[in-house]
Image 1 (cartoon, rainbow, N blue to C red):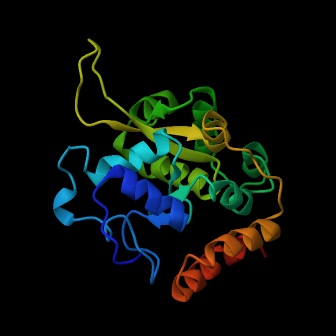
Image 2 (image 1 turned 90 degrees about the vertical axis):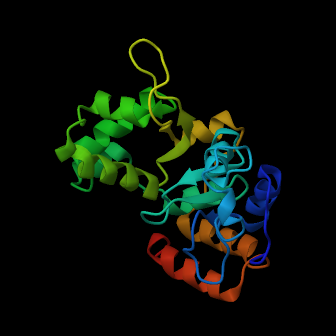
Length: 228
């Protein structure tokens, strides 16, 4: 699998489904990434064979969850695997309970609520709704989104065109966010009610025949805090 070169979205979709977890770039030792299994010249061409566009299509079509689930770097999680990983990453406390316990900033709770009320909200609209459009707010805004993805509260659900006040396309497409529960509902995924320990056991039972030992060891270490 590590030497496989995929050239189409359909081939890449099958690779994601077979591997379960696929980073966009090199992250997991002994494990492929989307950039390692595609030709460098295919990226950022703006065509149907551009892997940069596939990542959003995976999410919008329900092939894989897309987000920063294990740190600050984005990964793809196949739909078959995501319910297990969500059980593993999810906090036992609600967002409001984490805020009350001093674990989340008020702005993070505000961003979560805006996303909850506006499925698939585009990132620029989200910043505007949160009142965090100033340059000084960027770090807090970005950290809030990462925090909510790390606990699988939200996912990247795709992209949307940026349009000006006259409705004309303006600038780059923007990333869209959605609650993970809403994304699963939209794509007919059944939530699981498992303890983190049971979820981890089932996840690694699924991954073991598909992954190299080095990659499994890395992920075991990465996810260790969530099932302790």
